[in-house]
Image (cartoon, rainbow, N blue to C red; front, side, top):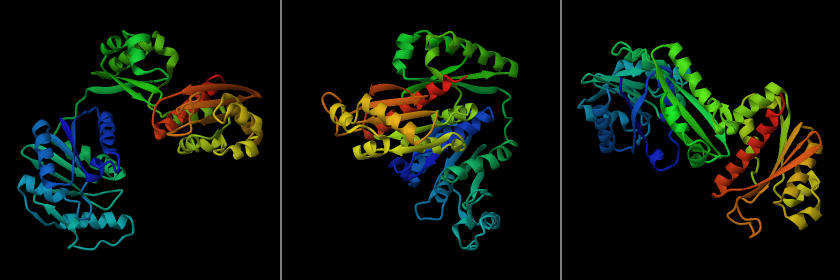
Length: 418
């Protein structure tokens, strides 16, 4: 089964929102041992939609679309698909009933048969939407199949879960081939250094077992190997061999996870498992570390809180940073970072206290301490260590890099506790 995805929406091409549905579909297909062959993004324009459909139908035998099924004037997907297939839009009692069910699920009254949701292209089937209002669509076209879903990620996901297999299984034999990806996450070593200096033979060793990918991210690289096997035993054997390659590689000391959790998820799970409390004193990151942690369910078990000490007066008054230190060393210094984390440990009785102070730019830096510099203090059991780093990037990227470094320092402290 060759599957293609057409993402429809001006707001994606204009950068107003990010496309989340390509990832949604890819992950969904991976669970079914299927793969996404192609994806295209087009604007809300009939000609662009026609071109995208023509390309995908030429390459694939199942086409999935996302976006443009709502009730506003820019939602033209249904009409554009109908014109592409040479079909008329007409009232459909079945679509009216599906729309009524969708609205009833949210205790809303549907407008009735004159509403656009009551109309379908000829030969289309309306699909219930368990998380929204707009019906999905399904049809056959010249021996190929079209499944249309809303652009809202939660609605698109539910469409896949509720209808993808049930609608396509009568027409396709789902492969028994097993597909799984092994993901190894590394930290603080650039991609070119991993494969060029640390372990130049790593890529070729992994490629024996599957398709290798390398995805650089904030202060790290995710190395993936997609493996295929005919039996579960073969799959597990290849996974074991891949992990043995990493275990004997010089990159091993930079690996912080084998899996797909985010850094904040991993930190929260480890802190909760080991029952270690922690807190932050944030300056340049403005609460970003705390925000990332509290986005994770269960973080309240061990995360006690934070102090956002953006101004020097707050550093002095709340964290007891000495005014002499601020004058002599500057707010962005290891001395001030040390005093911040020590002061935090006195205010919030956490077992691990992390402080962050830096210049995220574009102004504020000096020749001695340029923009991109950040200093960190780590206080644990009354002992404080400090760290200083310097990274390139704009303000938003630097804040993310600084927060990532702070979470890595927290993770390293957590790893010390058995």
